[in-house]
Length: 590
Image (cartoon, rainbow, N blue to C red; front, side, top):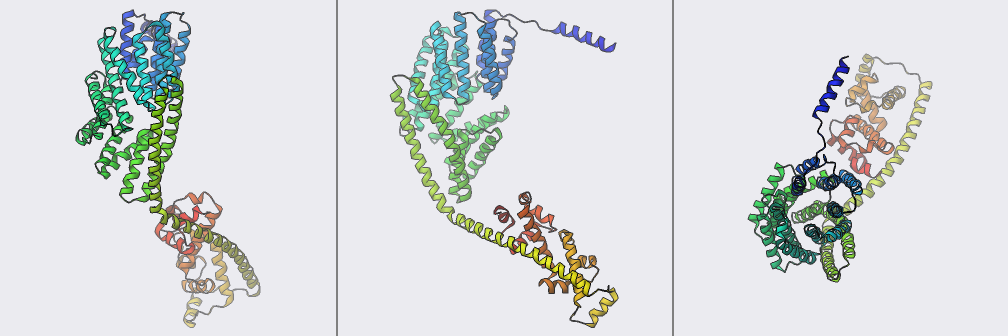
């Protein structure tokens, strides 16, 4: 009865608090749209909260927009699967809308957000196709604001693939159109558009300068536009951070390290506050680059290692990751640490080839799709870009040659050690076979001796008497065989793996005294008991390494403990004495 009452109570409660779907006025809808667009500049969760409000509507147009913009917001948060899911939902609602100007406007919005998502994923060819599709719909209904947005995104895309001059040309045209059509914008939306335009212009000039270092005026232009972007970005956190970070890069180019350092530390501090690992990674790389430029190599390494750590954590190979490894290779080369220099130069080349290979494919695809009269000019830019890269590839090859010369002696030594270990290992395997055969022969002889010469157990008093009576310890062969037989029995039980397997321990086990046992071991095996014990342990390890692939993966300390050595150092010393190589070298050469 209580369950039924509880169920009825919950049902009535849910009915009472359930929020009905809400229809927005046109003004409310436009205000929500603007709030969502502003959230794209940093406050993604706020944007998704506004989207949730829109999703309460039954209006198909508003639902289409809500799902479309949320697909890009989820992409900005790094959630690709949710981004694709929201975009698919947007398309379903779009299909329910009749053919009108509003539908064309929505199709342009969706194309833009889809293009932005592809751009974030590094798929520039698909991004360009989406932007061009959006322009087609916006041109049809003469939506100037949306056309300018899409052209700005195309400019960003061109900058990404190295088409800096075309990017600058588009953005300057957009800036003029923005001023001419200011009346079409709400104040905040206009400020946001100007901020974006100036950031993109600064970025394009900076990129253009990076490929043309002799043209200092390009750097002045980049600084000018970044400062203008900051002045328009008070309300837009993401834009403000981006512009400041980029301005810091310009200061580094201009060797104004003091101002650059201050900006980077401010950004790093902000990134920690908002828990943005991607922003902190960028700030860390920039600080590492700055300290490298000022020859503060140890400080540079601290920040460059942070870049590597964050890249591994996010499993992302980006521009900062492979440039970080490039700088680390240079630093370790300067510090005369060839192994670390080689390691980081290899990491740089591997990631560089993958990253730049993808970029080249995207650049060619973008330029092919542009199909404009400026294509030949842009292809010249691409050729210049490749020429620059070829120059650096040659420089890196020279750098590699220097590194190889520096470590060639280490490589030769490693090769010789490897060959030596291989020969030693083969000899040990043959030796093990021979030892097994010898043990079988010894057992047969002992058994035969037991039949021919029965042994009478000797008491401890008699042993003492014999010791005193004969200082040379002349033991009869039957008793000697008995001791050897019991010693071999201990071997079969692997007693020697015990850390306490000493002369006194073994003597007690086979019921004789230490003097007799030491004498027999020395006579039969030609070595002291300690040497005999160590050899058994080492032989066991060798046999396990040869026959058990899992055993090879153990650490030296673990192997030492498994055979009764108290520490890895003494074990490794005994192993090298027996085999001529270290345990790790032996395991690696099997």
